Every structure is written in C-alpha cells, then in structure tokens.
Image 1 (tube, rainbow, N blue to C red):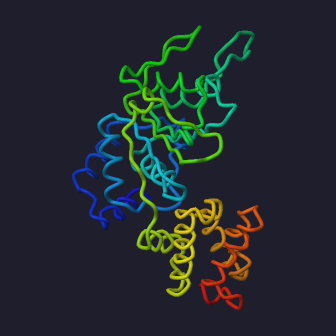
Image 2 (image 1 turned 120 degrees about the vertical axis):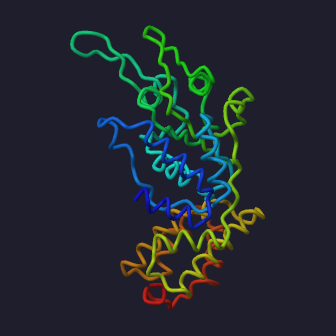
Length: 306
C-alpha cells in the first residue's frame, strides 16, 4: 500500500527528493510492535501536489502543521496519508466541550493497589513517536490549550503534575485541522497559532473530485462520474455564495451514496440519504433537491452510474 501511494504521488510529479527523504524517515524511526496496529492505510490517496509538498517538508523539518479551510477540502485525508507515508502510529483527537487536559495527557487511576497514570492520546503520541491529528482544534477550551502549548513547543517537553516530565520522541508530530464557522468554534490565540505552520486548503475542483471518485470507484461510468462531480461542485458554489449551508456539502455523504448505488439502490434515493437529508431546514432541503434534480434524473438506475 505504501508503494502504491508513493506511485500516486510520483504521478502527480511530487518532488522525488522529498519522497526519498520520507523513505529515509521511515527507516530512521522504526515502530514498536505494540503500536504497529495504529499505522492504518488511508481510505483514498491525497491528490494535490503543492499542498502535499508543503505539509511533508514541514513535518520532515520537525514542524507541526495546521490545516485550515472550509468543509470537504480533504484535511483529514491529507493527515491520514501523511501519517501512513511517514510510517507513524496515528492518534486521532477530536476536540469538543468536554476535552480537557486529563483527556489529552491522562488521569489518575487505581491499579494493583497503587495510583498510576492512565495515559491519554497526547502522552501516547509523545512517547511512541506518533502523528496526532488534532481535529477541530479551534474548539479546544483553555484547559486543553494549555496542554497543546507544551506539546507543540520547541522544547518538546510536557510536564505532568505529580509524575515525571514527558520528553517527546523525535518522530512525534502534531497535525491540527479546523473548519471555519462551525458552532462552538473560536479564534485560535496567537501563542497556539505560532506553534504551527499553517496551510490553507483550497476547495475541491473538478480534477480533484474526478481523481478521488475514480480511485474509490474504478467501475464508475463517465456520465455518472460527470454528474456526481457536477452535483458536488454545484453545492459547493451555492454554499460559497451563502445560498445554502455547508451541511449538504458532504464528501463522506457523496461517497456513501455511491456505495449504496453500486449495491443496487436507485441514484435519487441514495443521493437523498447522502446529500439532501443532511439539511434539516425544510426550505434548504427543497433548494438542495432542486439542485439534485438538474443532475440526477428521477428515472436513473444504478446501471447508469456503474
């Protein structure tokens, strides 16, 4: 799988010297057997030469990366590809209102008649040299941000009150992701942003969409591919113009719809589940349904997509 991803990057004309350095990184930092199950192949390859090169060069130089942008720009796909290509255990940390320092570092627990630390994902990532994906990092509250400040600092040392300090493994990296305008989000403070190299992810275009869908569905017919890509781009344009929300702009929903079409469900019903019904506002749902009607005729069958 690693060589397949490398070949995909070579086809995109990613710098050969960069790919060579990534291979060297993998050889320099072997992974312990206990964490090998965290090296998970990504669902799809990442498509985007410039973005990949920026992120990979930053990680090679020991920097942490913050991926920003609107919904459905491939932030998590890029993070998963990077972790796998660099051969690192992957730790996914989703921030929400209840995420605090004990969630990230660990908390006291009673084991074998003594109090010990039950370690959290940041602790595990730091010790095992993993890549931690800080998902929706702009939802982190102050208690969690204090841990991130120490984890991302150039000193690479985390002090755990009551326990020894944690020295970050040389291969440990942190990749933050954030969407604009989600409920519960806030502006990141300067101290936290300064600890990242920031990459603004561009919206998906027709070439990128076609590449992604062909990778996942090699048996999709040209007309079906054209209409599915067109539907997504139409929704993206409407969302960018604030005519609809970003709720129907759902790449996971589009992929899920295509899977059910391939299994035998009618295209209109599949798209209704994967795209249209993501809107819970009745007026918006009708607008999305109108967009779908222009792309997916009601009499289409699965055989016209696959």
